[in-house]
Image 1 (cartoon, rainbow, N blue to C red):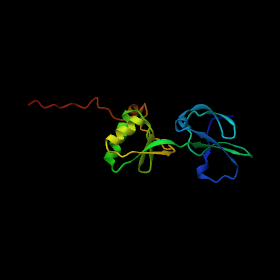
Image 2: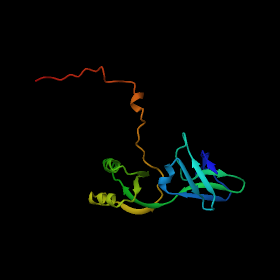
Image 3: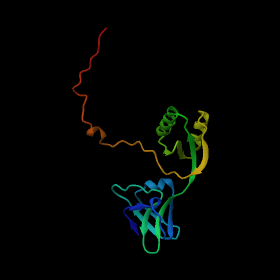
Image 4: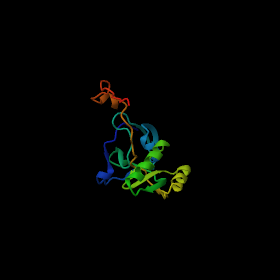
Length: 166
């Protein structure tokens, strides 16, 4: 079976049919093309193109009279950081981003997949990280549209630069 779009999410409704779970790792949720197998052995090919680019926990991939196939993100070992103020959040986020590591946000917590070197750095710098097992659901994404600068309506080309000579 080939899935090309996600129509709805089970977290927003009640379903009485038997549920066949498609359990995936957090990093598989952003893959656009992949072959997977549900817990009951149903083979699924996912080919998400266009605006539907990633799988979310609770997405319904398939439904018939007998069952419904639903995505679930497997919990994994994570580093949890409870930030006490905005400056701390900004500093930690910047450091994690500079290392090109994924960062997830859940309420007032920052979560990231466990990495020994990052855990050691956070501990050394007094952030009191906690190792636990959690689902990584809401990835923090700070990507800028590649055509962002073309969309700007102003330019600095014709603004004179004034430098005072002393």
